[in-house]
Length: 287
Picture 1 (cartoon, rainbow, N blue to C red):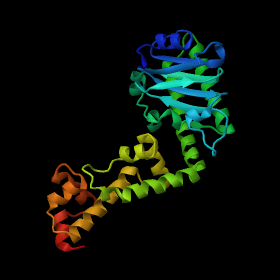
Picture 2 (picture 1 turned 120 degrees about the vertical axis):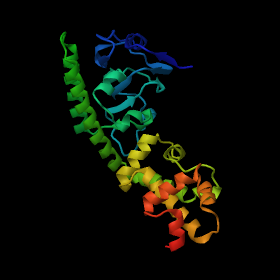
Picture 3 (picture 1 turned 90 degrees about the horizontal axis):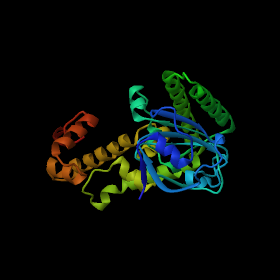
Picture 4 (picture 1 turned 180 degrees about the vertical axis):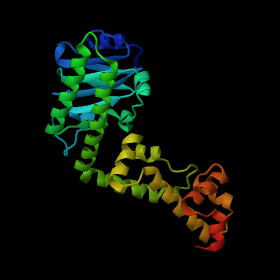
C-alpha cells in the first residue's frame, strides 16, 4: 500500500532531505544531499512535484526512447499520483514541491501536470542548459531569508511555459514513433462500432488502449493532426450517424442509443453542432 504524505516536512524526511522553510513550497538541489532514498514501493502526496534529474541508472522507467538523448529529463507528479522508484545510485538535479493552493492562486495550469512518469520530457543539450539555469535561479531565490513567493512562482511559471515548448519539440522528434500510434488510434476508432459498444468512444478509452495518459495522448494528437482527440472522435460519431440516417429505418432515438448516447437529446445536440441540422432534418434532406 502506498504511503501518503500531507506535509512537505514528512515528505522530505522520507527522502532524507532537510525540512522546508515553509509548508507551501520547497526547492531542493539533489547535490546538496548524499543519502537520498534510492528505492520506494510507492508514495503519494498532497503536492505538485516538478523534478529535473540526470545521471539516473535506468531511463526506461521514465519513457526514454531511441529518439531521445540520454541526458537530463523532467517529469511532473500531481497530488495523489502514485510514484515509485528503484535505482542503483544517487542522481543529480533539482525538484520543486508546490502546494496546489499556490498553483490555483497563480492560475497556473498545464496539461503535462497529468502526464504519467513514463511520459517524461527528455531534454536536448541546449534545453538542459536552459532548464538548469532556471532551476538555479529558483533555488538561489529560495535560499534567501526574505525570499519572494511571488518571484518564486513567476520563475516557476516561466519554467513551465518553457517546458511546454520543449514537449512540442519532443513530439516532433518522436514523430516516427508517434505516427504508428496515430495510425493505430485511427484503426481502433474506425472499427469501434463494429463491436456493438454500449458507450460513446472516449479520449480516455483510446489513451488506455495505447498505454498513454489521457493528457499526453490528447496533446500528441493535437500536435500531429491539428485537431484534438475529442474532435477526431466526434467526427467519427457524426460519420456513423450520417450513415445510419441515410441507410436505416431506425428511429432517431434508436440511432442515438446504438452510437452510445445515453439520451437522444445529447445525440441531436452534437449532430446539429457539427452539421447545422437536426438528425431529422438531415434524414429528410437526404444529404
